[in-house]
Length: 320
Length: 159
Image (cartoon, rainbow over all chains, first blue to last red; front, side):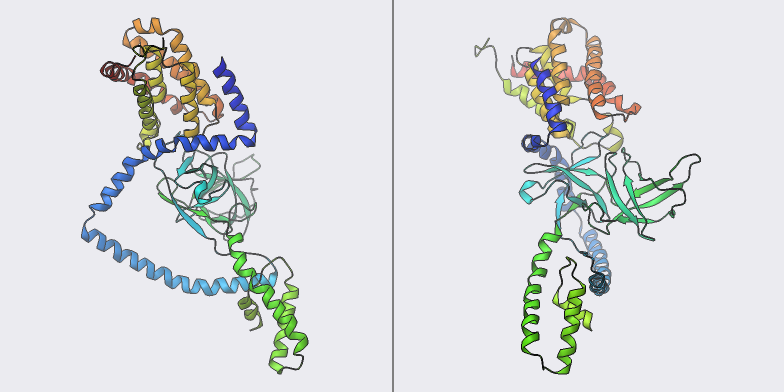
């Protein structure tokens, strides 16, 4: 009887009230040793596999990896130029945008939870600053987001969970939509698009950044089938997730980039504006070159009054 | 009943329950995941049947609570269903002990079904026939489980 009452109280407290979280978190910390033990055999098997890998295999791996590394660094060279250009253009538009987020690597605990709920457990928790709602990526795309943290571990709900939706846009034409999970390892589905929506098979979907939870531009999935059922209001569009939801062992947690990035970016700005403010009145008759430069810079600053933070190099780029 | 001779080796019960929890979490190949027996419920049922004075409703409730935290279900769902299972078994433990194994297995069937039913009602509308498979596998595993746990109980003289 007591147990019944206690359970009912728990149902209520856990599902309705928010301040029950610490208890939950404490309980999760309590069971973490059991979860860690359960994942030990797999980790051990992996370790043994690494240990007894033969030389040729390793060499082959190194060759492949260095080849991909070269390829990617070549791409990255161009990427940096493009990134800079993109920043500059966006600053002209006065829109704020971060191209790069910082990530932190975490590892999955290889434990099986209920096969009907799409959740995994990772080995980083409050102790690493993981927070609820933090986006989780793998090497290929978005995996999901953190739903619950304890001291040593946290729980991640995957894209495929039926209760999970993510705002996306089509990479080809920028059409925005919402993608929802369907559970049980099935494809995702794209909701609420009318029959005349411009969606094709093979379209790449990336995060749109609306809602402010997921950063912009990470791949979510690919459209695998588009169907317009008769007599229904919306198109039936299936999406295959880009991330390897079932095989990835290492995941990346996106750190709140804005907070960390703005500090080094903000620092030069007041100094620069101060320098300009002091430079303009005291040196009215400088060389012609300098004179043409300062108004341009100041006008650039006044037109970009949006909350966007500005770097000195970017301002320089504007003038050139 | 708190004489030291009467209640001994309680840690063995705890260890079996923890092993059962590990079995609930152990990674399985994809096709086998849906057939995982309810190890923890079965362990609790055995102890509740053999030693109802040791494994009370409270113990079942606590175990369920830990399972809730582990599996990420709403706190209290498994706690409730495990407590209910232990209650039912403890209520009828004298009769259950007399039954032949297959008849016990049928009881296990109904109790695990009940536990599952509660979990499913709480989880929502997503129903698939495969969701009932653990009930069947638990029933089939019961004779083995019973033999193993009885062996453990006699070896360590848990009482």
